[in-house]
Amino acid sequence: MQWNAWGSAESATTLPQPVKDLLGQVLGISGDPVSAPAAAQIQLSPSRLTSTDVAELEAIVGTVATADGDRLIRAGGKSTLDLLRRRQPHQDAPDAVVAPATSAQIAELLRWCADRSIAVVPFGGGTSVVGGLDPDAGGLRAVLSVDLCNFDRLVAIDPVSNQATLGAGVTGPRAEELLGAHGFSLGHFPQSFRFATIGGFAATRSSGQASAGYGRFDDMVTGLRVVTPTGILDLGGAPKTAAGPDLRQLFLGSEGTFGIITEVTLRVRAAAPVTLHEAWHFPDFVTGAAALRAVAQQGGGPTVMRLSDEAETAVNLASPGKIGATDDTVSGGALAITTFEGTGPVAQARQELAAALLSDAGGRSLGAPRGQAWEHGRFDAPYLRDALLAVGVGCETLETATTWNNLCALKDVVTTALTDAIATSGSPALVLCHISHTYPTGASLYFTVVYRCDSDPIVQWQAAKAAASEAIVAGGGTITHHHAVGADHRPWVGAEIGDVGVRILRAVKDALDPTGILNPGKLIP
Image (cartoon, rainbow, N blue to C red):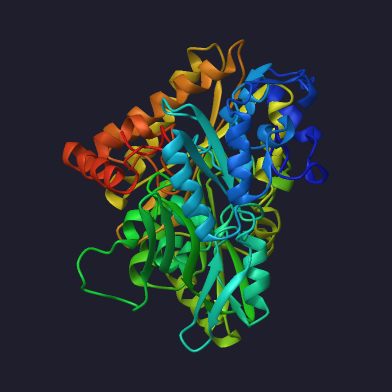
């Protein structure tokens, strides 16, 4: 990916006129570009590795990259906060980048780093939006970025058990390509799909847009290979076990703080021959949420099921290519998107069952085109964020989850917290929300916040994020449903898991990483 923006430069977008008009109306923004430094103008913190360090590393992993270009691209993730930092003239970065090719090499590398007091930050696709890739040395003398790009193959496939083992560095598209050659699909499609990796999905408990049908990524994992400073673990095998606590759960969501995941064994499914789309309109978000709850609790089998609130529906964010455009099919209210997969009869039966429930709950079918339009542009929203940032408009997302009986109340308090926090900086805020993932007991809320950047946009967003996080914790939500903890959510983890939970995490950390080299400053309060 680009060092200072999402994705590839070839896919970058410019703001269409309807978006500029909307920004002028809501935020008073002219749309003129804001200057930003080029990569050659960035001054990185100098590498703290000695020539002896580099020579010893080369003996373990081969090439050791210390050039500014290699270090800069791994200096953080892709949150708005990360991209604002990329606009600063002086930046921290890892002291070097290595790309081991085997678990044995990583084991030797971790032993060396423990002996030399050097921190390790695992790097997959670089898509973290919660500070999970910050080059924090944690009081150690240097930071090493360990790129898992060489773990990029299909290790094994079991077509009888519907199970496959993939290297941690395999990207989402490559996983679908490798599995598709055998007639299978993983079905994991988060917005970061094009760039994020299998290891990153596991380390962050990722949840894809098709989670209603395929489940979250942690639901798919049946086995892991993890390299820790104290040894290598191969976990999993049987589909279920009663052999004590499931140790796989220690590493799913551990964000590289307990070990480096190198292989993931996953449940896969036969590729669906038919996909059906249908969009729905509801008079308001509350009615739409009740309708989605009926489907989640009573059945219907959608692969994708999402609901945009009134604000998000009004700006057509469900179809990024049509933002600001007039839509005669939707006037006010809330828009839902549903997708169904399977053989023709199975997909149709699922669609009909869900349609009956949604209709009974007050929904009006809009047919297939809106759902198809959403699917066509569903990975492109981050490019729009970059275009907004280029004209001085902040655009960031955050998410949470809660029970159905608390969903609308939590939505209201988080919206108010964001609006009030941004207002203190002198800017109005456009706060949009949608239900992104559903369960029988509750759902995830995904917020998008658009605002005018002030003279110190980093402090401005940090204050808004803190206000939203406090509102989430006080309002009974989880501090993160699928973005992970990283550094950004770390201050609120203790409130969610309690003092005993914090002691458990620290005890596991001490047992697996006694010298504290693995991704300091993340996850553990």
